[in-house]
Length: 183
Image 1 (tube, rainbow, N blue to C red):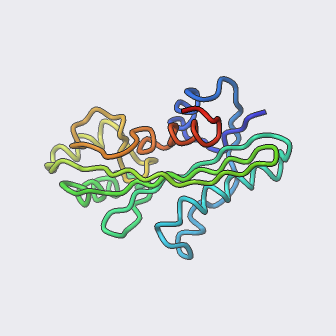
Image 2 (cartoon, rainbow, N blue to C red; image 1 turned 135 degrees about the vertical axis):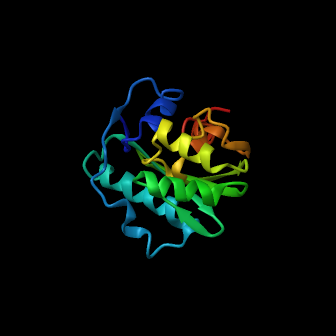
Image 3 (tube, rainbow, N blue to C red; image 1 turned 90 degrees about the horizontal axis):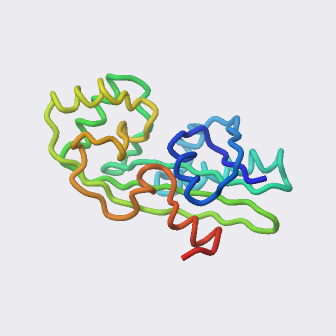
């Protein structure tokens, strides 16, 4: 059995590009417990490994894929805003700036472990107060790292460097190559 260790609907959608049949099992861990002890550059990597091993310990004979995505702006990790006020505050910070999106994944399979981090850059347009508030009202990005979804057609993003899927939450190109040996 192939297990996706994530409750993210975006990761589930992206994984369908690579695997026809899989089961979703959400790890019961506090993702934010590592925030205070791990540097931002390593945070997504360690959280992906923690999630993968949490599920793999219950299903040791199956394949497990876990992923974590973080957004870093000016050295600060921008998590999930959780509410309207925080989403607005985050988007104001991001306006007109470049951020780094790190998605790390851990794959555990028969005799195999792969853990990698993929980096992309997202360049924001300069956003007006009205544009920010309109976006937050329409898309309610409270559960998305950085307070936005790259897939939302809202004019927030000028351009990206790197993988679009990575910014969305699952670096499918890298996983295809490293886990499934597809070019």
